[in-house]
Image (tube, each protein chain N blue to C red):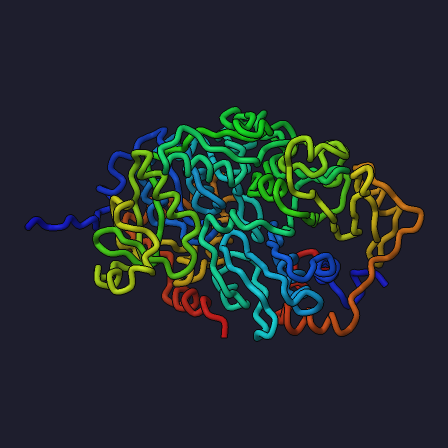
Length: 302
Length: 268
């Protein structure tokens, strides 16, 4: 009898094949379930000209990649920090032409991902009708619905080369479980896998396979969709691992303040990425035990 | 008495006025960059006149009702995990978030025009914008299907209320009556615009924005001096009614016990 293959990987193996100009899709939303450890590892590899996708929302994950000069194009329906303000490097880079912005609605990206997951050439959405988005983004086509003839927006299937996501727990075969919401991660994994790309998940904790067989109804994403699992405790920090620990607002504000200037953003990247060559070293340098205890405690309301 | 010196902070007044727009038995989603305000409005509605109203905190799929439950803090972000403790009864899977029609939702914007069209894209030439906005989020989708929606602007100025948007991110009434129907947009369009100075609705016939009430401490002239959009001004514009003592108590003890609304930036 053969042995079942473990997907536990080194980050080098997981990110092998990522090249300049590829399409990267990032799971999670806003400050939640963002695979920040993997984002830092991509920055460390100095990958350039990425097309970066995230749905519905991105914040420090994509903004940090822009600060580091890794990004050519952003495909994110909402790019900002919600109540903490707009995204500093995104705003600057969009204003001075350093990045292209693929203007869109959430349902355009979802239609494009669904199309990829079902191996269809394109998807359709009502959003965009009556707006300027078709003029701003020629990839979104104003079309007539085949049945009713009413105006609709068509969008080509989106097939990312690499998906990165963060879950609370996973086993060595790639089954994933989230403590809180999993946002669009299942669709992200399906679209990437069926589109021929690679899906990499970091997890706070690797748990035994028996923990999934015991209650398969609680498995959010099947191992069938996952190529690599990397154990990275607090791998979403300073974002939340939804339901396991809260995002660290002060640490996110620290980035926002640093990124007010280009030099500040570069200093931040040096301090938080380049000068800390491993996740352990990052945790030792930037994450104190008290803030983690607080982040865990803050997931409860009593 | 002006809002600045009155006991009710602007975001509290916003939550109160907006809560009265929400009907019993409806399903809706708070949203926008200051989602504390619509979230408070919806919880206040549940605890006053709309006990069967269900809140979907959009991007996290939490379906909540506060009636008969212990008060929970109002968090800054509707996606905050801790909202699970605020009367959440169901968590929708991600596609259900998009497959559940809303009676209403809330939107913000960089610019709004006389017909309730919204710009979240950019101000200035798109190739080198003066201000790059966060993007369309799901506004175009939501505005195409929701029965109606509410717009809240954090600033009331000639830069935010304009005659012509730099870019249309979500269509309200287009350029007037019939435009939505012609494009097959089945939702009803914007119902109300709320700003720190005034509340505005839309004329049923012309679909043009109309001054509905001016908040205490502000005048019609002041509103018009700060509005770049052409709006209808009725002969008699009332002052926005403040909540009564009982409503303020519900707002401050049950909806927002930690005083988040009173302490929002620019609240006073």
